[in-house]
Image (cartoon, rainbow, N blue to C red):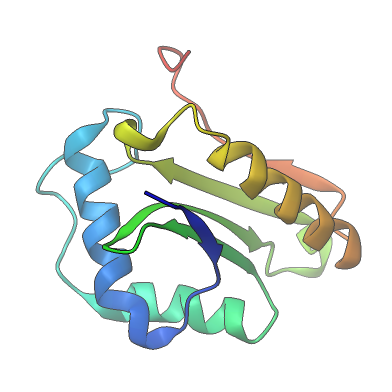
Length: 129
């Protein structure tokens, strides 16, 4: 099944929310525990709107049927940290090990350089090999 990397727009918020919710259940490495994520698309729409406006970075991987992973880089909002971005990445376990994460980070690295981002922050759980 072919995978494609894609940018998303605000109308994709429900599909992105479903991916995030699925990741909460399929991996213990995401921030939210299973069932903790509120079914509120406004937060997801806001993330996508910032990426559409070029303020932040967001990319997703999808099959013909569904989204299977994403990477977002949320730029620091204050001037002192505008050079930094906080990363969130999630890929469904069935699609890990296929180069999706590497492709995500290559594209994000280009965006970071073009946007003056010199510091990237990623929180990782110790058990996440």
